Image (cartoon, rainbow, N blue to C red):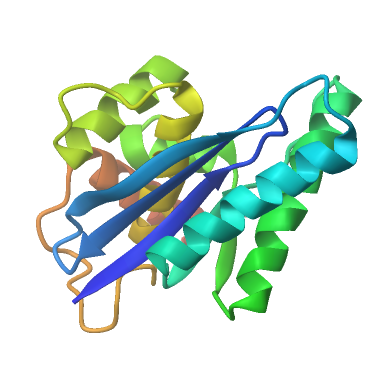
Length: 192
């Protein structure tokens, strides 16, 4: 039994979309990856329409069982945050229209899931995505690799693997580090 997850790295100029299938042994397989682009000099409404159609097309083509979106986080650049939030809304709408469950994951959560280190850089994330998916090199641009990392993160999260799947199985070092970090975060500490 496998779980098919569509990961989305939301962006107004470049929106990464990637689909993976993860089996009961937590092995990830690449299904598809793409970067939806919109022209920075086009009107906002046209850019959003382009991104929306791209996301919807990918969802309809690959029929994911779950969708994972990178959670918008605070930045000093309000314009970037607004574009990212708007694109996240488009992805959420596409999922809601098709009754696809959605989860939001923070960048550090995604990095920790695939590399074992929540402060990993884009090159490290890309290298681990390539390794986990058995690719010769990291998908480019980084938005594509990030979308796949988001999908893998979601599939590996607690309860993200299909029912009946082994939660221990043979875990990668990154999966073990993330599992252990989750356990310690949930374990009450004396005096806390």
